[in-house]
Length: 405
Image 1: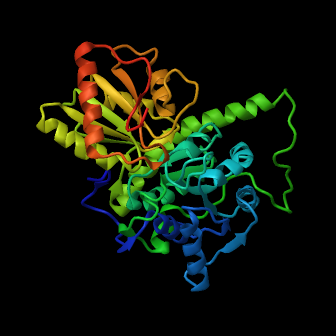
Image 2: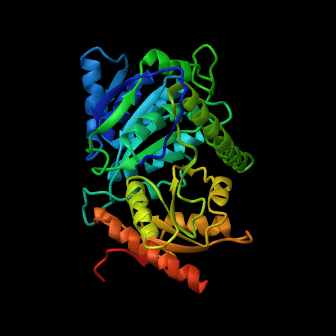
Image 3: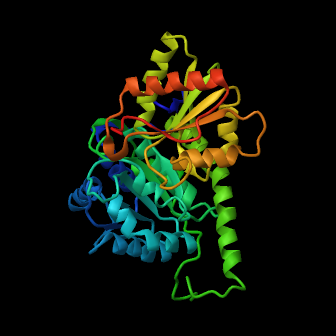
């Protein structure tokens, strides 16, 4: 099952390819007609920029590829390109995203509409080349719009939507499009891709952000005193709020033109659900399969997919979960030292804090370092949620699924 709602009428049709999520990201960059790609290899992202290099070598793509000496430089080069009005793209993972951390804040603070693909991977130490979301959650407060994908098709579509969001004058913020390393980055799926000419009807090149121009000189990113720094940060707050509506509009228009719209969240079997699991990325379809099994056992189970994580779409979430008694938020990352260790769980807990008639919230941690998580594990979570709903009381600490304690 997929999140996308396919519309019966649409303006454009593409061609179906059997490609991985990494290749889907590369095809999206090509079809978005990006001007500059800054590249540094890191597992499991490397195939993204390798494929773009192949496009360039074959004459299928017209862009500048900048080979840099580190991920810190990769994002710095993207900033330089975007600051001149170029459509910029890069990709990374794990320690690469961590090495970029200083520059993440500069990209968002200067309000540059860069798009970056993230094939997620656990942070060291100990060294892990396998998947979890510790890298992205480490960057969640850097001022970037963050979108999660649960299929290769969604990766492709989301990168195109990301440029629509990022370049909108109401936003002018960079965007991360996130998908699971290995589980998705190296798995081949059918993906519909479109002609560049059709894509550019959706995201025409029209730089509207403040940029470097020798004929109209400006200074960008200078030292700012306490008299004004606060106001610059508040402008980012407002831009992020605007991004909610812009993302909604971008998704709707994409559906009208290309036949797929996703919403800011995905709703599966929630209409009559007593208990629900909230998760994102590759976990989503496994959770849906478990919900079907739970219903066979008499548990009214549902799944909510969190597609847009930053900005946090609380209104959509509250409506989707309005009749649910107990909600389990499944995190693939750990917020060390927090009472409840799930970073997304804590987002939910904070957002629901002052609301009446709120569901019972349960924090589950799973899949750390790509520990396998099966349908039976999600079924166990649904059974635990059913007991929580019956008792009317949620546990005060996170539940760690699959750990040898």
